[in-house]
Image (tube, rainbow, N blue to C red):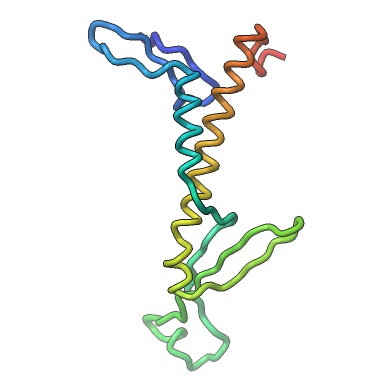
Length: 136
């Protein structure tokens, strides 16, 4: 039997204490403050995505066309949007190692912000007695 209060994001559930579960999730206002503190810890974030590719060339006698193939690469591609256009930049292994944590930070930032938005939306709904969005 689920006694938790459900939020739009199923990962955000407040579970009341029970005899079997004396601990409970912090109230939404405290969880929002926790998320804001986690967001504040992020010092750098790079947008976009990273893809590591191996490729074949156009030379028919190259090692990449042999059996088994020995593909060229790795090519580390950073893709992002700039002014609505997709831009790709090749990174060296050293650049990827240096900036890899910043790409992870951007992913974490999006995840934390999504959770903060869901909690804030829930708080506004409760404060204003608004129906859930799916009831319109």
